[in-house]
Image 1 (cartoon, rainbow, N blue to C red):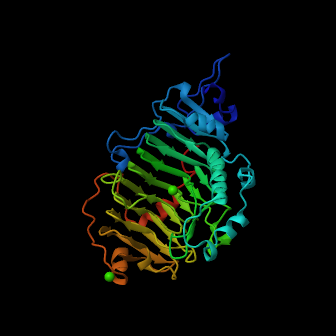
Image 2: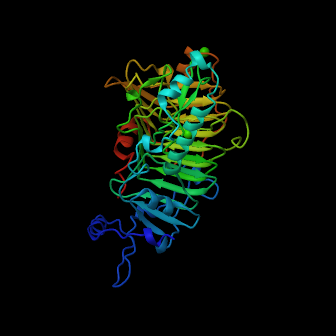
Image 3: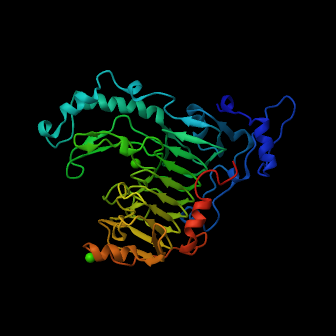
Length: 438
Ligand code: CA
Ligand code: CA
């Protein structure tokens, strides 16, 4: 079934890869389709000991793919077909892929859906603070379903998705649902927007708009490595959205969310920027599939002017080390590390660059957690002096109840702990797309 979407790299691209020394397999014989060239990094596996993703069976993705299961994709449908199923496969993204395929929100809207009518019908002053029901909400849900059929792309087990030069997935939501062994590297994810946000009148004090799509969602996924990707809202920034029903019309959900009993995940060298709800680890306070799971390592990631959830954690033993928190936009900053129910965050040798209006006591936030280890953080304001700080102590000094200062575990799986002072340089140099051979 994949034959139709197999495509060989252009000769020029192959020549470039050969010149760069990254081609491990490139052959072409007369009368046969070329075997796609595979950058060596696209065959890589997560190194032993590199975070929670290396636990259990380890994370090898599609590294065992045979030549017939190396795909070069340039469209939404090619991507969706190539990543399906559990046969080991390497999927090389070779273009900007628009998951909406050029459709605008009007193209998904159900004939009975009308935003202005929706706003009139469910205005709290008349409808009350209860969940919307009835024909307009039903029409919204049908519209959302139309968009979901396009933008949601299910990724099968034993898959590596690797971005070639300038690879981008725009508006898409890769879903890793109850699958194991997936690697995603060197892909620029941008603006997974929801055309039909849901109105949640009891979310917060005055209600909120909530959206469905993350760029990447791990739901019951085990052994996953997200590495050297970027995540951003791009040109579709939240600040430019209207206010509806008195609240910002939030068309985005997470950048990369890790929920529903997902486990053994390493998130390394990603550049996450200009996005609000960045990384949710655990989506419910109700103990269930998450207990004893949600073990995630985050290292050498750049969190730059993100609003919150960097990450927000429930239940999991989550190791947060050598990350660069670049928090210079006090207007969008909410908090960085969310300490939720039964979470055990261990944060070490992170670096915070902040504006003077982003207080040190705002980096940790208590979402019902009781314990956290935090050590080795350095911080500075702008180009001011670099000072040793303890973000957890700052939180505890300013707020109650306090969070106990021992997460109750010590990370054993690390790729190596760098001094916090070197984090801005290392992460700026190495994190995000375009740093691996493409
Ligand atoms: Ca989500
Ligand atoms: Ca206190």
